[in-house]
Image (tube, rainbow, N blue to C red; front, side, top):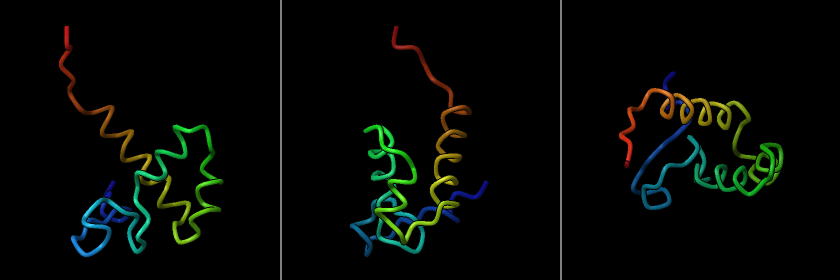
Length: 75
């Protein structure tokens, strides 16, 4: 999966934080919605410039990163 289709980072947009491609909506906001108990539909209603396919694509990319990254135990 090419996450660049879903995420952009440009110094001129929000100071370079990751945003949904073609928008100025930070990816972090989606994660905050979900961790706060809101659903993806709430996020999409509040940020209509983000497409469902972008939100799902970002979540799929994060899942891939979590499942393929090596973790070292702190113990």
